Structures are given as C-alpha cells and as structure tokens.
Amino acid sequence: MKTLTIFALLAFALVVPVLGQKRARHRVAEVDPLTEVTGAERPDADGWVLIASSDETFFRYRPGKTIRPAANIREFWIKSDFAHSLKEQSQVIEFRTRLNLNVKGYDHYVYNMGLWKVDCRLQRYTLERTVEYDVFGRVLDDYAGPRGAASPVPDSVGEIIVTKICSSK
Image (cartoon, rainbow, N blue to C red; front, side, top):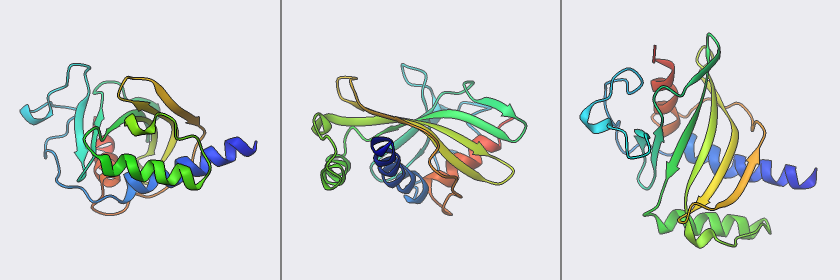
C-alpha cells in the first residue's frame, strides 16, 4: 500500500503539472485532428498524431482510438515525447532521487504513455495510468489508478488536449 501511495504521489506530481500547467508553445492546428487530419497532423509511422506541444514535449494521440463509455466521457492514450530534452530527463531523475525512487535507466527516459479520462461536460480530466519508457522501448515504471480530477490550466497543453478531444464528433 505504501508503494502504491508513493507511485500515486509521484505520478500526480510529475504528470499533472506537466500536462495541466505547461504553456503551449503553439496550437498545432485549428482543424480538429479527431475529425480531419491536415498536413501538419499526419500520423507518424506508428499512427500517432500531434495534438499539442510545449517547449520541450510533443503530445500525440491515435485518431479513432478514443473510447466513449458515456456520452460526456472520453478515454484515450496520450504519448508524451521529450526525446530531445535533457532538461526533462534531469528533472525527472532529480525528483525521483528526492523521493528515494529507482532512477535506473532514467538517463535514457524519452517518453511516457498516459491514459486520460476526460469529462467533457465538467471540463475535467484524470490520469488513469502512466507508463514510462526508455529510448530502447523498455518500461521504466508503470503506475495505475486515478490521480485526482483536475481542471486544465487556461492556455496550457492540458486545455488544448481537453478542448480538442471534447470537440470531436
């Protein structure tokens, strides 16, 4: 139970501020990427499409993979890629070190996958699961369990993602 609590705190401290508060460098397109793919939003080789970005991180999703368990609820995966950001890696290592968590492999940490659940009526989201990967595709950490509903900060990456997902048909 203590380990789960530490992981939940870690996930909330690492992921929610990153996604909910980072200022968006730009809005990637005014066209809703869930209904139309423009030239700037073409899927990569694995089918991931850019939905938003910040100074050091690119946020991608897979069109057509959004689940709707209820009329106002959307569940989907977001891939957060910061492969070219040594600053992001060092911040994660420093944070994990302060919490006495394993840092093995985090010098090669390049992306994470987050399972988002958005309530479009309330404009709130939770992160249901986060899986962290290194450059070789190995799992560094995997933590599950909802980590508190939050309203996205205005003009943030989180707001862009919630708005685009909820405006899809």
